Image (cartoon, rainbow, N blue to C red; front, side, top):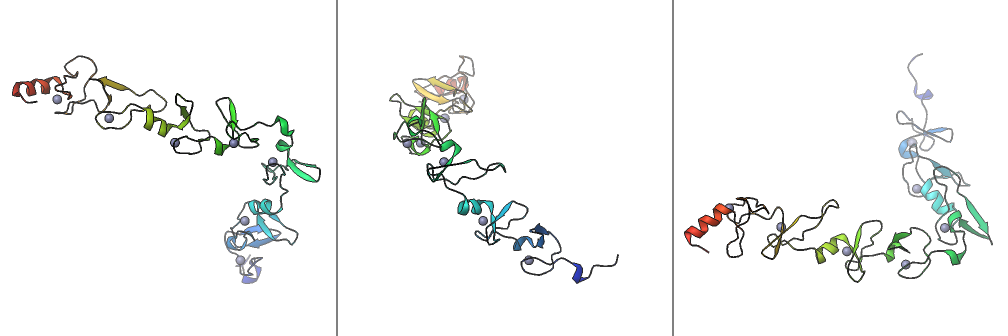
Length: 241
Ligand SMILES: [Zn+2]
Ligand SMILES: [Zn+2]
Ligand SMILES: [Zn+2]
Ligand SMILES: [Zn+2]
Ligand SMILES: [Zn+2]
Ligand SMILES: [Zn+2]
Ligand SMILES: [Zn+2]
């Protein structure tokens, strides 16, 4: 077989130019990747699934469903297929429903904050159901979602950041809160009625890490300042502080 002539090369179904590489095959034709696009958002569709409207206009699936899918009359979201399976749409009283939205209004769960029915995206916490926007940090108003949270003595909900900022003991050296890492309890050192990070509990002269044990590496405070034993002895001998 001889070299291909221009005539036998495939032409793009949109622009009519020859398609040499990255051929998108769709609708029985060949397209340049940049010529096979969603009519609504102009996104290149590539090898993704797409859909056609009655005028054979090409849509990405997102836009197709946004434009043509029936809307659930309870949650007002489109009823779209999941995982390539047909959506199970319930029709009743001339309205459409998600399978999951078609239930007796009285048995639906009520939000623990606003009292309205919670239909989708239920946040379960404290034994109750909440709208995502109703389960928020009392301090920064951030939606907590599925993140960890903490309660104060009034059962007010805090995001962990704010909880520690407000309630964690503060290191008297670096003045940052002493907070648990990776869910483990923080190792807080108490000395002279003050709190310290393990890593901040050092001799103020030689910076050596001090031990909580009463060894030579232990803390020998002088005038409320932290010193190791040798530095304590040096300072005492010099009669300073
Ligand atoms: Zn083209
Ligand atoms: Zn689109
Ligand atoms: Zn619904
Ligand atoms: Zn609510
Ligand atoms: Zn917060
Ligand atoms: Zn510290
Ligand atoms: Zn020292």
